[in-house]
Length: 80
Image 1: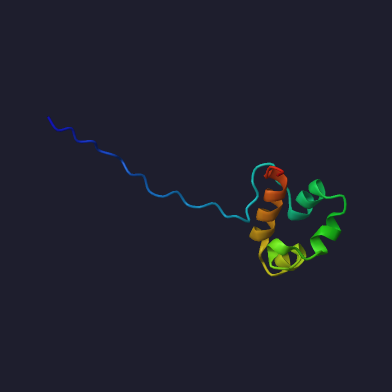
Image 2: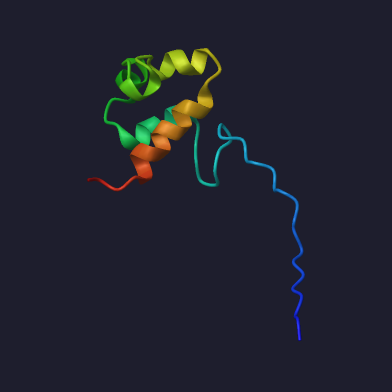
């Protein structure tokens, strides 16, 4: 006896906007203030993970998603 399995394939869920705030997140400046003693200095300093640009430059260019992604990695990534 042959059994046939039927699977219901659900449509792909839309990807969330990477620049969107997660529940409990503040603005980029607020998140930087949670992580750094001198958030203004961090925002102005070039960063290797931002291709040598500063977070402030990325924000000015409309690249908030890359800055949020970096802040999330700093905040949530395990220290190695």
